[in-house]
Image (cartoon, rainbow over all chains, first blue to last red):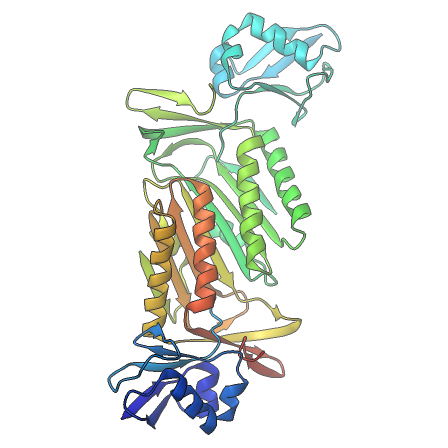
Length: 80
Length: 80
Length: 138
Length: 138
C-alpha cells in the first residue's frame, strides 16, 4: 500500500521533502516503518527520539498502519 | 509625649478618624500602646490580629516608641 | 524593578512589558481580579485602601527577598490598585522574568503569597446588603 | 477555551482577557519569549514550525487534562506562534483562571510543561555561525 508521510523540522531536512511517498506492506507496523526509514535515511537513527503520529495521536510501536491514515514522523519536539 | 497614630481600614472605622493623637509615656512600648488602645476602643480587641508599624516596619511588642516615629495600626491585611 | 500603587486601572500589558528582559525567556504573571462572589456571598464591588508609604516599602522588600531566593530573577514588576473596584477589575499584577521557566512560577507565587501576608493593603467587600473588611475578624 | 497557532505576533493582553472569568479571581499566565542566548551561544533569531492539525489536537488535549486535574479551572487560553521570531518576541502564552490562586499556578505550569513534551512544534535556533534544531540530537 502507498503511505504519505508528513515530515517536519529536522526530518524534513534529512529527507529533503515535506512529504515522503512510501510503498509498504498492508498493515505495516509502526516499528517496521521506522526500521525501513532508518535504512533509507541513516541520519534518522542519530536523533534523540523519533515517534510516529497516526491521525494526530502518538502511535505505539506495534500499531498497524492503514492506507488512509494521516501519518507523520515526529522528531524531538521543542515548542514553547 | 504626643504620638500621631495613622489608622486604616477597620481601625479607622472603629476609632472614627484616620489619625489618632495620643499622649503616652516617653519610651512607651508597642505592647503598652496596644493595651492602652484596647482599653479606649474595645472593638480593637475583637480583631483577628492587630500589629503596630514603626517607620514602615512591623514592630515587636517590646520595641519602644519615640515622638518622631511614624506609627500606624495595622489590622489584618487583605491585599491582592 | 517596577513597584507601584495606583488608583487608576492597571495596564496589564505595560506591567508584563516591564517584566520582560532580553536574557530572560520566561515571564510568569499573576493577575488578581475582582470575583463576583466571596465565601458564598454575592459581591457588588470592593474598596481597597493602602498605607502607601509602608506598602511600597514592604512591596519592595518582598521583591528583594525574591531576588535573594532566586538570584536568576531578571525583572520584577508589582502593581497594586487602590480605590473602588468593580467585578472583573484587576486588583494586582505580579510579573517576573527568569532565563528558565520553573523559577518564574516559584518566584511569582512567592511574591503574591508574601504580599498577601505582609503588605498593608486592606479590602472591604460590598454586598447587596452590607459590607465587610476582609479577614478583619476571626 | 482558546487554543491557537498563529504566524502573527501574539496579542498578550487579548489572551489574558480570554482567560478572565467573573467567577475567577486568579489568572496565572506564562509568557515564553525569545532569549538572546541558548546554552551559552548567542542567538540571532528562531524559526518555529508546527504540525498544525496534530499540534492543535494535542494542545486541546493538554488543556482538557488540566481541567480534569483541576476541575475549578474556569478558562484556559494557549496561543503558540509559528514562523520566524526575533529576540524578545513572544513564542507562547498560556493563561488560566481559577477562583483561588494556588491552582492557577499549578495548572498553568502543568500546561506549559506538558506542551513542551508532547505538542509537535519544533524550533531551529539561528546563531551568527550556523543553526540547530533544538533537542534533535542527544
